[in-house]
View 1 (spheres, rainbow, N blue to C red):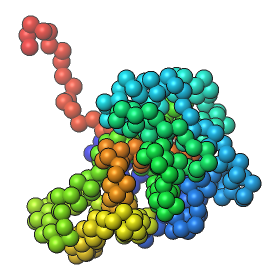
View 2 (spheres, rainbow, N blue to C red; view 1 turned 120 degrees about the vertical axis):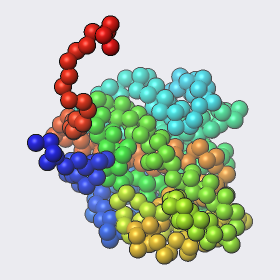
View 3 (cartoon, one colour; view 1 turned 120 degrees about the horizontal axis):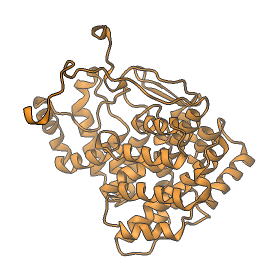
View 4 (spheres, helix red, strand yellow; view 1 turned 135 degrees about the vertical axis):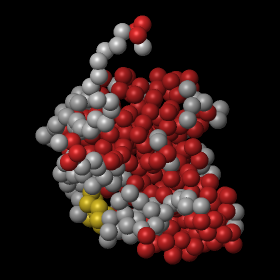
Length: 377
């Protein structure tokens, strides 16, 4: 009987639930959040608008956006006890510190244990506002500085850069960070979102699910691509070296980081928005060579696009962070900042009509055998 069981390793191609949040067409290379094209959202929306769209189901009108934005801005601070915990583990990897800090918030904020949909939304709003504060605070503390206090006059992305760098960003830099967050906000049943849903399936609270999501995102196979691309760009060094680098990688049957995606066969629809951002920011920062190296790699990879090896969003993200002088070990935490609203709504969806997620494994171990006493083994 078990000979007829089909194994879908990694659950590839398996639909485990319905979702009204993101619609991904990997063959066509399209992505929509609740029916809106990612291109329209990246071009016209703010991250706050996208958060409202994902969490509450619709784009806000002006009054709704003002109230939603005010709630986010008011929730940015974290308890002093959490900052003390960050000081204790300041030498850890930023993802480990972030996960620990979110877990600490679960213990310190009493309403985090509530599990109704209203509580999930309320706690999700607060966590979306707090995660940038936690990441920036750790960066300051591990470098011997006091954390920068959130600035309630700044939007979500601009305030993140303010807390991280201690200086007000330009409008263009803030907008690019905003677009980065929008592009990473939600992406269906990716590994971290699925892991969060598994946690919610046990009737755990939202903070527990976000800790699970952070733990899963920390794995290099999920969240590490932007960092790997930056390492690749530094290894290539100049645009002239790109073709030889790609040729050597392909000859050795090695992957070229930033190309290919588990879902997309065409170009990742998010990539074009980051590409233009890299070009503009590189010119602004007086470092156009990073963009030139990336484009040389894209050109060298064109012959392999028919095999589904097209550029993905992470190909450009790392260089943007590099241009801001952001350490590479913060690239994944930045991904987490953007993904927060997506995790929250995935958890809320899981909670509606909740069911324990419990797949099967097909046993392929030894046949039944007799017990042997220890002196006869």
